[in-house]
Every structure is written in C-alpha cells, then in structure tokens.
Length: 228
Image (cartoon, rainbow, N blue to C red):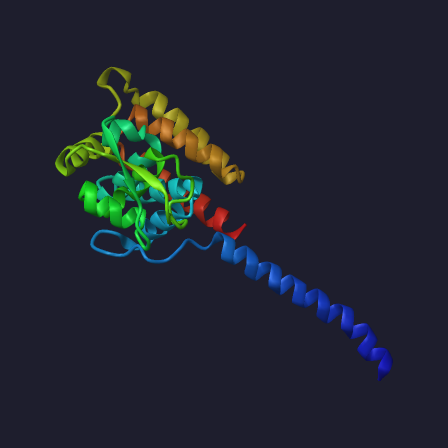
C-alpha cells in the first residue's frame, strides 16, 4: 500500500499543477465583466472588456469578426475607431487638467465629460494609460474640451467603413483571390485565407459569395485562436 501511495503522489501533484496552470491561463484570457447595455452584445462586451484590460489585439479580433458579419454595428465601429485612430483626432487637441477623485473610472469620466461611456479607451490613449481598468486614484488626467456632439461626429467619421474606390474594383482578380483563399483554407492556412478574402472583398465589395466566404473563414480563425 505504501508503494502505491508513493507512486500516486507525483501523479496527483502533476495533475494539481496542470489544473492550476489551466485556471491561471483562463483567468488571464477571460475579459473583464461589466460592459453591458443596449447594442453591446456578447462579442462587443468581450471586446470592451479586453480594451479595459489593455488588450487591444484581442479586442480587434472580436470587433473585426463582428463587423465581418454586421458591418453597420455601431458599437463595434465605435470601439474599433478608438484603437485605430489617433485620440487627439477623435477628442480634439484642446484640453484641461482634471484630478481624478477616489472611485472615479475612465468609463464614468467618459460618460460625464464626453457624453459616451464607451469612449473610455480613447480617453485612456489620450492620457497614455495602457490599462484603462487600472485604479486611477490621484492621477491628473487631461480632459478634452470638445463638446460631446463634436466627439460623437469625429468617432462616427473614423469608424465609418471605407468602400473600395470604383476605379480599383476588379471582379476577375477578386475571383482569383477567392480561389486562392479557399485553397489556403482547405490546407489549414486560415490567417492567409482571411487576408486573401479581405483583398478580394475590397476588389469586389458587393459580391455576396466572397462576403460569406470571409465570414466563414473569420469564424474558423476565431475558433482556432480561442481553442489554442
């Protein structure tokens, strides 16, 4: 009996370490909770959570997947614009200092001063804050003086989809790119397939077959990434 226990001990210890590592990994990858409200949806809420944790790469993946299937999603466009656009372009160059009070957050300050709580990430970048959800106690923040309606207009312009110029459209070349993408997808090169399909969509943006292929390839890529 003693021999059996001594052999089982290392196995149980290894199993415990494995489970703890898995839990720690899940904790690192899980986005913060708390972003709910009209128009959010599960994917947008995850993206906002990732942004709040300072993980723009994961947020971008979520938002691009949402926009691939719902190009007019306002929340997704608004959040993505804050990643891709210079914050001064969105919020304006004129600013004034504000000392943060205990308990205040960037989300609350964005709603108070900018008229929209979802502009928290732009306000964080405006103040060079890498992790918007981190405590702000005692920080002196720079608050843009632009009016909420001006900020909303700037965000809408930055987040608006940019259609391909008519002169650059080429349905024949788009078909070639689609065929190459499907070959890459069948060979397991999902990222390359997504990139090729995006190029094809730019050349033939009204093609529903290319759009459906891109949506499918994007879903496969997201599934692979989340399971890895």
